[in-house]
Length: 603
Ligand code: ADP
Ligand code: MG
Figure 1 (cartoon, rainbow, N blue to C red):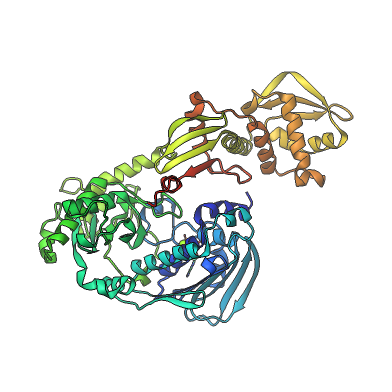
Figure 2: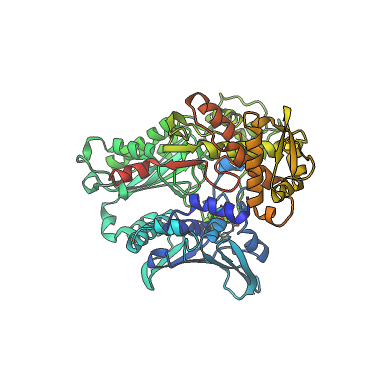
C-alpha cells in the first residue's frame, strides 16, 4: 500500500476532528519536555491549528523522519508497547495529520545554529529547507480534510469544533501543570495558565479560583503496583454530567468506567440522584498492569487488575470524604505487600524527563525480557536477575505470566459473532460497541497475504485443471495476460500462449480452486487491463498482481454463520487485518459512545 494512502487510512483512526490534531500535537510537545506550549486555532481548527513548544526540537533528519509512518522515537521494540510512559507511542500521528491537511513543521534543536522547515501537502512531501527558528518545534496544520471532502462534511459547526479544542487544551493543561499553556483562539487569548508544580493551582487557574476553598485533597493511597491521589469536590457540588471528572494515568488523560464507577460508589449515599461527583484523579500504575494500546486515538485503556483498582479508588475517595489527611508514613504501613510492589513512577515528574525516553527493557539471564520492571530495591534487583527469591511470588510475576500467555494467543480482538447481515457482512460485538466485517474485503486481505507468502516461499500452491481451459481473448487482453505470465506462475496459475490470441490456462491457485477458472481468468485480465501498468505495456509487480488477483478471487464472498469464526481467525492471522490491499476497510466500528450519541444520550 502506498505510504500516503496508508497514512490516510490511519488518519481515519487518529484524526477524527480538529481537536484530535490538537491532542496529538500537544502530547508531542509534552513528550518533548516543553515548558511552554502555545496552541493557536482559527475557525474551530478547521482553517488552522498551530502548536508550538520550547521542547527538545528535532534535527533535520529527525524532522523528515517524523513524517514517515511508524517513525516514532518513543517505541524501541514490540514489547515496549506494554510499558509506554510517554504520551505518544505509535509514530502515526504526524504522518496521518499531514496526509489530510496542508502541513508545515519547523523545528530546531537547542544549541543548533539553524532549524528545519518541512512542508507537506495531502501527504506529499513538498519541501525541506533550512529555516531560522527558536529552539523547539512548531507544527501548523491548515485546511484539515481539504483533500477528503467526505470527512470534512462530517465536521460539526465551528463553535462545536472549537469547544472540543478547548476541552483538549484544558485536559492537557491539567495533565502537565509544569508547562505554561496558552491557547489563542481566532486571534484572542482564550487561556493562559502559568507553569506550576502544584496541581491545585492549575485546577484553580482552569476551573476558577473560587473553587479552591471547597476542593478536598485525596491523600495518596498506594497498593502494590498502583497509587492514586488528586482532588475532589464535596457531594453538594456534584454535577448532572460526568464532564467534571478527569482521570490521568501515568500523566496521560484517559477515560475508564471502572474508575468512574468506583468513584461514585465511594460517595455512596452522599450523592443526590442523577448527580456525578467532580474529581481530578492522578493514577500511577506500573506499566505491566495496564494495556494502553487499545485504540490509537481514543483515551481507552485496559486495566489488568480492575478489582484492585476499584478497591484503590474506593479507599481514596472514602479517605478524602472523611477529611482525614493522614501522613504518608501512616499510609505506607498499610501496604499489604511491602517490598513486592514498589512505588510507581512519581507523580508529576519533570516532563523534561520524557524527552526521548525509551521504554525500560531489561534482559534476565534466562533470556526472557522483563518489560518495564525496574528493580526498586535490592531484593527486586535479585529477582530480575532470575536468582532465587525468598518471598512468595509478587503480583509482578503473576502479571508477567498473564502477559506472556496473552502474547502467545492470537492477536484477534475479542469479538462475539452476533450474526450475518445481507450475506455480505458479519455482525460482531466488540468490547466497545458494534463492528461490521465485510466478507469480500476480509477475503481480499486474506488471499492477498497468502499469495504474497506463497510467492515468497516460491511454493505457490496450485491446482491442476483436468481439462485445460482455452480462451480466445481480444488482442490487447491476450497481450496483457502473457506479459504477466511470470506473475501468474508465481501465484500458482499456469497461463501460456496457445497461438495467436488464444491462451491456455492449465492450473489455478489452490486458494481459489472453487472458482470458475474461465471467469477467474477473464475477470483478472479485465482488472489488469484497467490498472495503470496494464495501459503502459509493462508487467505488474507481483504485489500489485496479487492485489488484483485477491480482488477477483474474493468477489462474491458470502458470509455464513458456520464459517464466521474461521474467517475472523484467518483475517487476524494477517499482518494488516484492518484494510484491503488498496486501503478499503475490512471492519467498521460503531463505538458504544457513538451508539449512545445516536440515541440522543450525551454520555
Ligand atoms: P509518536 O508521538 O507516537 O512517536 P508522532 O507521529 O506523534 O508519533 O511523532 C513522531 C516523532 O516525531 C516523535 O516520536 C518525535 O520523535 C518527533 N516529534 C513529534 N513532535 C515533536 C515535538 N513537538 N518535539 C520534538 N519531537 C517531536
Ligand atoms: Mg505523538
